[in-house]
Length: 112
Image (cartoon, rainbow, N blue to C red; front, side, top):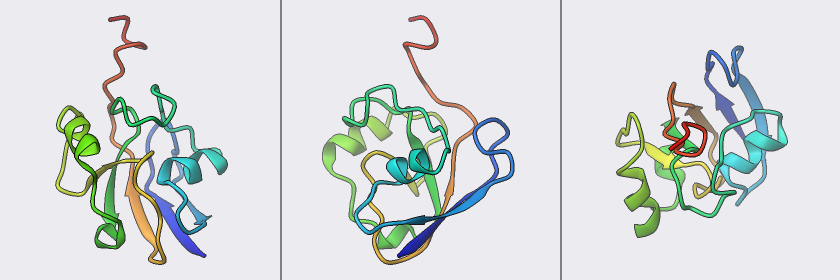
């Protein structure tokens, strides 16, 4: 079993957290299972950017993003080379360190 360390986020995870993840589990599912409420407006269907995360350590252990994920990532706030959608990035054997961006673009919650 590998671990995901979520870096502190002022609202979602103020203290940060290190949790166990099962192989092939998405970063988002692992976070939700451990009480870390990352937004997921499209209900994990790879149709928005609200679960955008930045993989600070262990990025190379993830499978490559598919074209649909890359298209959505282009719209994410604060995009970085190590950005992934939490609903699509699946844990492998290597531990990960993940940062939850300070902002997200959620057209529903923003009233658009």
